Length: 266
Image (cartoon, rainbow, N blue to C red; front, side):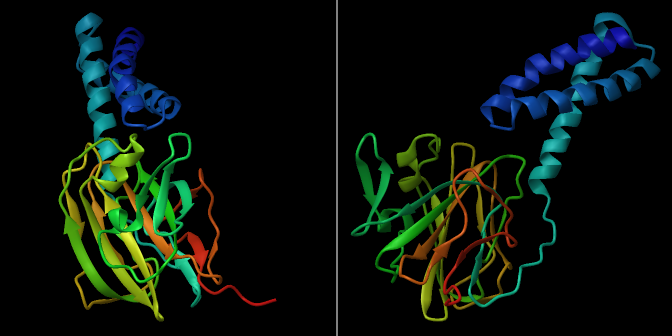
C-alpha cells in the first residue's frame, strides 16, 4: 500500500497542483487535500490487489476523481443563510474575497492608477442608475465559493437585464467593463443599488431568479453564476453610506455586512 500511495500521490500532485494554481484554488490547500485523498485512494486500490506502477496509476486516477468531486460539491452547494437584522445594513451579494472598493468621480471608475485608465460607471452597470456618484465593491469568486447570489437589501427590482459580451480573463482589469454580465437594479427606501454579475473566461452561464417588479427580502437568492466569476455591488456615494469591508477580506453571501446606508448619529 505504501508504494502505490506514494506513486499515486506524486502523480496526483504533479497533475493537480498546476490546475489548482491556474484556477486559484490555493496551492498549499490543494496539496494537503490531494495528499489526504491519495492515502484514502491508496488504501482502496490496495484492497483490489493492484500494486506497482499500475496500482500507483489507479491511485492517482482515483485521487483526482475524488478531488474533482469535492470541488464540484463545494461549487454547487447552496447552504441556507440568515441575514442579520437592521434597516440600514447592506449584506454581501456574493461569497468570496473583496478585491477592491472604488469610488467613481464624475461618473468615471478608475481601473489602473499606474496606467491611468478609467471607464464610465454606465459601462459597468449598463443600466440607468440614479445614484450620481457611486462606491463599487468588487468581490471575486473562486471555484470553491458558493456561486448563488443574494439580495444585499430588502428592495424592489427596478430592472433586471443581461448584456452579451466576451468571456475574457478577469485578470485583465478592463475585462470587468466588457465581459458578459447581468445587472439587477434594486430600489431600497428611495435609494438605488445595483448588483452586477460579471462573466469570466470560464463562465458560460449566468442565471437570474428575479424579474422587474419583484419584491425581494434581504439575503434572498436572486441569481447564480457558474464557474469562477466576479460580482460588483454599486452603492450610492452620498454622505450617509459607510463601507465596512476592505480589499482582501472574505465575505459570505447574505450574511456579511458590507455597508450601512444610514449609520446611527452620535
